[in-house]
Amino acid sequence: MQRVTGIGGIFFKAADPKGLGAWYREHLGLDVAGWGGAVFQWGGPGSPHGATVWSPFAQDTGYMTPGSASFMVNFRVADLDALLAALRAEGCHVLDRTETSEQGKFGWVIDPEGNKVELWEPASGQ
Image (cartoon, rainbow, N blue to C red; front, side, top):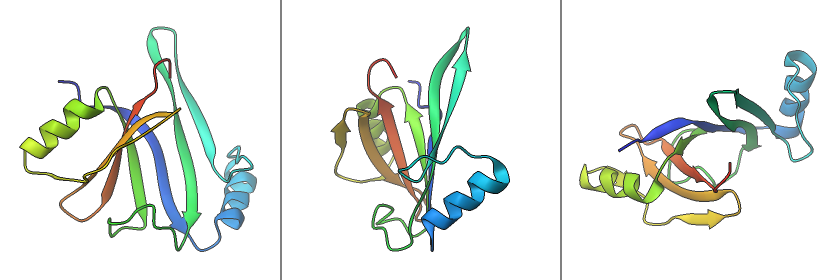
């Protein structure tokens, strides 16, 4: 079974997400959008197309809970349901909920050091 196919996003807590986004825009040239993050498109002829999101979150966000870190990595996966079942069978701490939206399906696992890891199966065509 294919597991991770790429990095879908890097999310992290920041004391001033808007100010930090402005710094990255000015000094590193990131195309920070109005919603506060940047999207890097990748792929080309002969390789899969996709995107990786860079996004600072407010310091008090609960999105990374129950993880203990100030960041979260989102990994693209080929088959979320199969991967979550395999992780459970392997004894991993898989959260008991998933979400489906126009972007695709999402699930989460907590790694051995307490970091919340987001798993994302993109919607068809992404």
